[in-house]
Length: 357
Image (cartoon, rainbow, N blue to C red; front, side):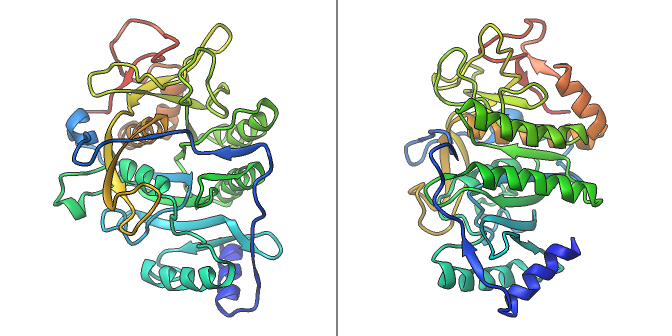
């Protein structure tokens, strides 16, 4: 980690120039289409799942997305590391901020403003909104709402890694580099338990590159959860969720009914793996204007949301039984799910993932 910290400290001394990444090529990663619910509607994860005695304490979840609103009261407790692959140093290294080592999140905000002035985009701040929503589904503590709108696992530690720009797209290289950087961090002795990928790649060749990078983490015992996709058709599971070993999350509503947009498996595509809430999910939105059109909180629908819920549920299981046992159960499709005994289906996998009691 000291290597990455040194890069950042050098930047703060203005000894290293910044370089915004070029526009994504034709085959790029993208946010899956998602749906904004009418103002005043939405369901919180605690309404559906209740409150578990587990909260994700001691578990590290990495979120690769559009960044995060690190000023949001619901998320400040959880964010322990920020990294950017959309703005890097001239020699291609990511910008990394370790809370408590480089400074506070307030210090990170000051530095991020200097980045914005230099390259006209933020290194870590979420200019889209999607990453903030996903992070809140996982780890929000409800501070802004008096505790009423919380995430699944409010005690987890978040690493938020920016791989998508303000328009919700990014390059395959940035995502691949970010995943392989996580591998290096893990190999250097840093704890990473769950990786959340609420995004998709529909090109097979490029998607397999990303899947292979994910599987390097899986080989090390890290649980990678990815979105099944929102095209609503049989056989339409996106990469990297399509790959064996990566846990594919699909969406159902609060009554357990499959969402109309949720991609399904087909012969030869034995996916998705688990279903979780992904319709009208009420969670954090940036506290400043963003593409979500709301501030503070917003209700969204999509397998991006169900992926975040499943990552949160997974974090609870990691706390309850340990990462190795949780990964083994998920890979064997034996994590508790409802309805029980129906076997795998191409619409909801083995069922609705259930958190530990």
